[in-house]
Length: 155
Image (cartoon, rainbow, N blue to C red; front, side, top):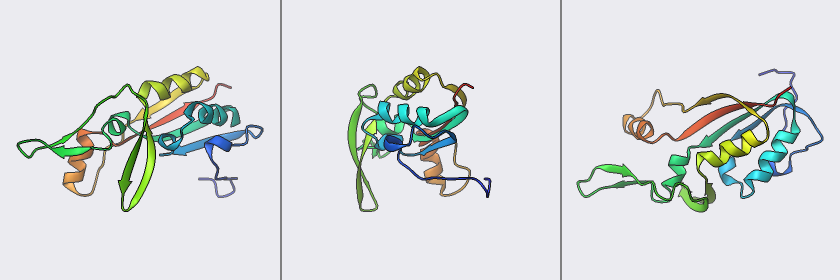
């Protein structure tokens, strides 16, 4: 991080498309935006040529299993429920007393929107946990929680 850099917080839906940024970061927010196509269009328009769009997003496998997520089968073995993967839909999720609306979309929706704007995929990773509670690590290895994508706008 450049201590002399100019960093700004904003919303993808309202980003200033007249400014040209070197880097736009979307951290676990694309699943919260109803108008994904509009938000991506604004983020791409705000990037300078050669700029980077860095996205961390919940995996579509994870959101396809909501709101049920992890359940136990008849033998008591934990299983993750994935259903209606190809159907884009809003889902309500709760944790720690907070209830929010997320959007499930298949990975192809994100990829197609980004590719249609001419962006070039530079990196795609599904980070695995390296420390912490062994049971949580085992769950995250069975159903990846999130992925990171680095896209570049052609110069």
